[in-house]
Amino acid sequence: MPTINRFVMTSAAIKVTFLGTGTSQGVPVIGCQCEVCASADPRDNRTRSALLVESQQAHFVIDTGPDFRFQMLREKVSRLDAVLFTHEHKDHTAGLDDVRSFNFLQKKDMPIYGRKHVLEQIKREFAYIFAEHKYPGIPSVETHIVDNKIFFINGLPITPVEVLHYKLPIFGYRVGNFAYITDAKSISEAEKEKLKGLDVLVLNALQHTEHLAHLTLSEAVALAQELNPRMCYLTHLSHKMGTHQNTAAGLPPNVQIAYDGLKLEVF
Image (cartoon, rainbow, N blue to C red):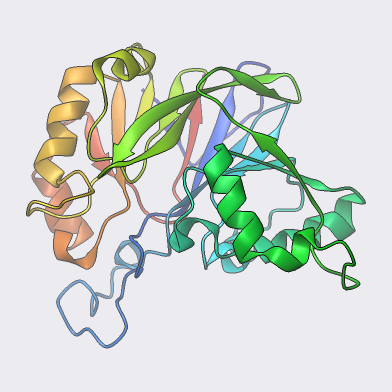
């Protein structure tokens, strides 16, 4: 079983921090007065989904959503070796500009990794970063195309896992015995093989009712039972899921709801 909120770095261990666990609007939703959005439980306050992974070899984030700056400040992150993108939607990319702080701190370009079409979309939306004549002080990045095969960050092997977000193919990522899947609706049998034998699996679970592009709670739980990790954490939750406390009470023992700031160590 993974240990929560305690971490001693060893060569085989990774530390995982859930930077954000909310859907594209975050929770609370602007103007909403539902039970979840009005909740006083801090676990019901969810910024846009992102993850920080730290090992002896590499520190990287998966996705830079609109809350990236706040998340970095909250977690007091002072080292970042790379950014991995799952896909090109704004709730996963909009905070890229704030990698400039790490450019200044580390005196080097920020490597960013993603599918070819994801990087092309980022180049369009952040055209000033890639301009021939650059404005002083803008972010500085180097792009790396991710195909569906193992790649390395500072020698740390990363395995992409392709899933479908409705009809859009996107990547989750496996690092050692940990895997992170967000915005999935379906996963092929071949890609499921990459998710066997995990200590910790993270899956998206948007809400209780059927959705075109996201796993529902029951679908995520069924997939977790099929893949059988030692522990599964659910992320990318909307306010339609219900409160953290009520939702968690009905889950199997090896499935839990993630929340912003949750830390795990995985060996």
